[in-house]
Length: 116
Length: 113
Image 1 (cartoon, helix red, strand yellow):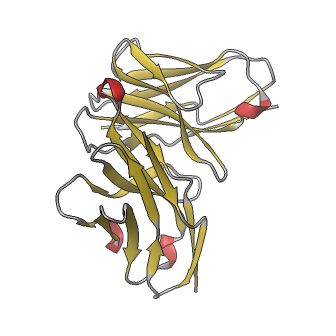
Image 2: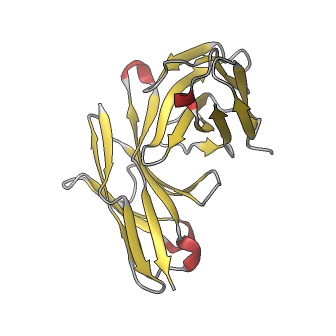
């Protein structure tokens, strides 16, 4: 079984300040973890992914995330927010399910609001 | 490559009507998925397929049926639409191997009156 919890439904920051979006996961197997971004009325785009290589993962647009097994966390960060970062962010866990399939589980999403 | 495409982009149905949503991918991916997205709920898996001719239920399969007769296409059917099925539907595909990324279509906005 697997699950993912995004700890904040909304995060509000000022432009130029750091961003932290929190994600905790649970998995019976060694998981792959992903962050996706969805801009208003758009589809989902991959920001970054962890697949058991380096624990600090760098993604697009200056985002990065650190896999911490002891804390079962995969928080997303960015040093300086930009107005274009305003969007919905989804944390996803995917592990080997029964029957051999990889079925992703999505968090409920965090809405990032960026103020001028 | 067109990637993942969805047809139609918008649709309005009356309660009890039926319709089929088409998802097509040109990346030769084994896995295909149908999700629905509702406010505050994230994406919830309806059905998925691990290959041509195989389908399986996800988290919220009731009221939906699927078919994957060709590897590149994954159809989602609503036999008798209900207002509770008003949602945005996303299709995704991914390759077979562990850790591979899902590629999403642009979505279909469905309203059931």
